[in-house]
Length: 468
Image (spheres, rainbow, N blue to C red):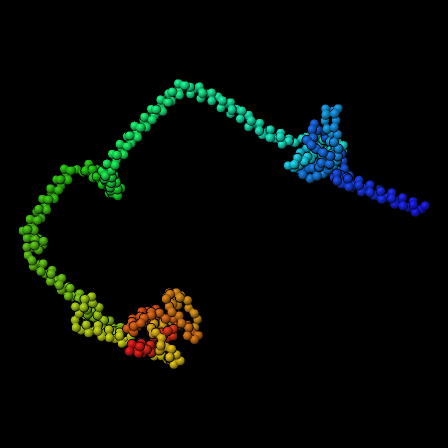
């Protein structure tokens, strides 16, 4: 008996749990909070546009409750009473409006609370102000109503315009239009004939017209090119006319006649041999004296230029004799010998420097000559001027190379050597060496066999052997 009681009690508990769970699940599906306290508010509407129970109540899109009940009141002007269930954590200010609106494009409805600015709040079970959002149909109707009115006005204006056109274009007007078009056709034929005649005339006289246009173009071109000159001529004419107006012509002519009389008197005295000018014309003694003086002055200047030491003596130092002339035919034999001696001295100095540099190069590169003599003898030989050597690399165009950018760089051991002025004839070496020493005083000539520098004399010998 006790076991059966326990079983019934267990069945009862399970049934209670099932009922409680079903109640909770039903309310959960409806959106009713079970563990939050809620307040109820009421709203009257004339229409609810498809609002249903359990639809959301929102504030700025946030759900704060739901529609708890909808009651139809046939005795109260067919109004609808909506019961809103809102959590008690939200207080509704006075003048809060409960507006039914569309929550999505599918037409789902909800209630949106629009809070007022009052500092007083509604109490639970108060009645709120109800409002319904316009439906899509109503909105379209509102937007289309002005367009409809404009379209109706436009149709009336079109009807009036058609009536006016119909009145104007009666049978008589149509006949007049036909006659006008016929006249226009005849006029166009005349114009076409005239255009044909004008075209024929232009074709026949095209050569003359071309020449006329060419002449006109030439005239306008000359006017444009000589615009400044024409302006100057006009300005000069204006100035000349102003000057003529300002001058006393008669007084100017009188002065000119007086000047001519005085000039004639001077010419008469000259013809009579009076004065220096008259003596110069009548007697050629003065002219001969001037000619002799000029000849002696010319000889003096030549002698001063050729033999300046006769007139100016420098005691500080006097090495050799230098003669600078512009015409060698004016030199004496002594001067010619002095110039030749100077040239021979310069040539000997160049040869002496070449020999010194050759000996220096032979001593430095003797080892290279002994080791690579078999390779060098078969290579092509050319000559260059070594302008610089350094322990580190020097970039082309640097200040150390005086801006030279066509320098050949060869690395010999741990040193970098730089060459310039390549040439194939030994007769050109002294010329290039002299030029190189203007920027590089220590420059000296070398021979290049393949990519190896060799002594200048050895390169000359190899070149001579190949020539045989």
